[in-house]
Image 1 (spheres, helix red, strand yellow):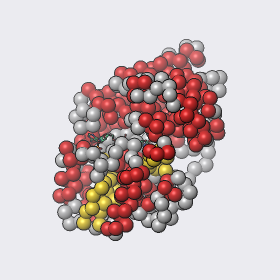
Image 2 (cartoon, protein in one colour):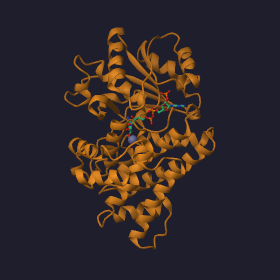
Image 3 (tube, protein in one colour):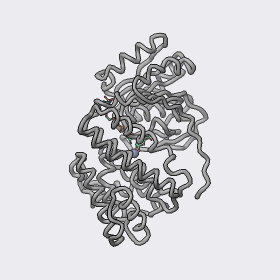
Image 4 (cartoon, helix red, strand yellow):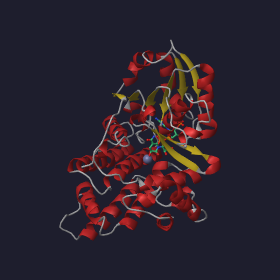
Length: 387
Ligand code: NZQ
Ligand code: ZN
């Protein structure tokens, strides 16, 4: 078991009507608020009006229109400008992971005199950030419980996972009823994203029995509850369990003491959504079974056997490779069952830029040092197999 040094300073307030505590939390931090949100889902939900009512004694400046795969220009730049011009003391992000990720980059940029891209691209280490509070409305990324944000820069096809310990939200509000309106597409994509966060921690060289059990339970919970959410979008119990499983997905708690995997699937998917602006969870679901097939070998087969037996209940007396291959097929079948398009062509990605993306990934993501090393030609093969 590896050494670790773990600290998550984020307060989680979970459950129906959790946001009634918003004024109490916010008043301890600041009165001048940048309220950030996306394309309007929070208005349809009635959440925008509720927040305005709860914060009627606060000074609120708004940044709206933050897009999925949030963009550096204009959203991050505009948010930083608003914070600096208005002396903002706290950012309140209301929406999905994209709104929160964008708000994290804004929080760091607001406390930095230079170009915020210096921070996101790790040229300069942030010395401070504005405090962030969030109300998360989509179960997926786990951004509400981690210190990362993923920002896209369209002109260079970059999509960078920016992590800094200053970026943990001070408090995250999680009310599962606000996820009742999430579309079938985003529910399935969110499930795939969270499953993938767990798999990126599970498929590692050195793991513990404790973490394996934790991960396996997380995967099973996500699959069962995603199906229940799709069957009945207002199933509180299913939405709640899914939301919490997603929240735990990305902050490392599933794998404390494990060796790192290098997160190969995220490294590859970030290029797909940088080049083609696709939905992150869908990109992950498409490449996952192809990656699994590609990396199945004598080195990895025992992990796949454990995954197949404990997550999918495959008969453990079968031949190792038979179990592993069945587990990969069942992974594919699950994603297909929840309605995810399972080919890159289905989400508008053709052969044209495969080699360019493989090169970009190989140069920028360091997958040659991952638990299962991938070179440029390996990445290109996995992407082609996903077409
Ligand atoms: O923009 P609005 O109108 O709010 O609509 C959003 C958006 O169109 C909609 N939505 C959100 N909550 C809703 C809702 N629609 C109806 N009812 C609700 N309650 O859903 C659409 C997608 O939203 P988005 O925020 O993009 O989805 P998600 O939460 O999956 O975030 C995806 C982004 O997070 C990054 C991804 O790369 C992607 O850019 N990630 C962030 C991570 C992190 N910070 O730790 C880790 C992940 O691996 C991931 O990379
Ligand atoms: Zn993800």
